[in-house]
Image (cartoon, rainbow, N blue to C red; front, side, top):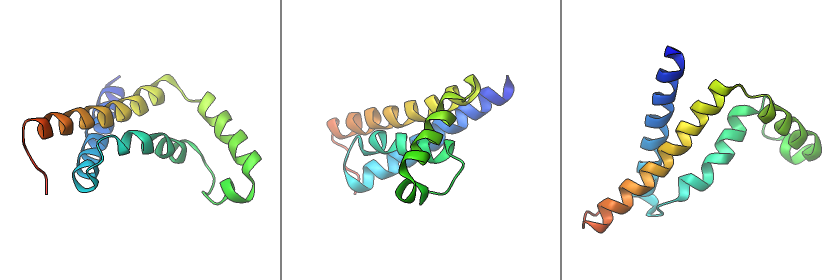
Length: 103
C-alpha cells in the first residue's frame, strides 16, 4: 500500500513538472496531455520502438495484451501521471490568465 501511495505521488509530481516545463517552453497548454498516452505505451510495452514500424500488427497486438494485463496498482500510478499533466495545464492557464508570463 505504501508503494502505491509513494509511486502515485512520484508519477504525479514527475509528469506535472515535465508538463509544466514543456508548457512554458512551447506555449501549448495541453501538449503533454496529448503526448502522455504514447509515453504510457512506451512504459507498458516490452519490445523495441522499431517494432511498431517493422512489425506493426504484432506490436499493436502485444501492446493491447500488455495494457489488458496491467494490475490495478499500475493503472492507478499511470492515471496519476495523466492527472499530473492535466493539473499542469490548469495551473499554466490560471497563471497566464492572471498575467504571469513565462519566457
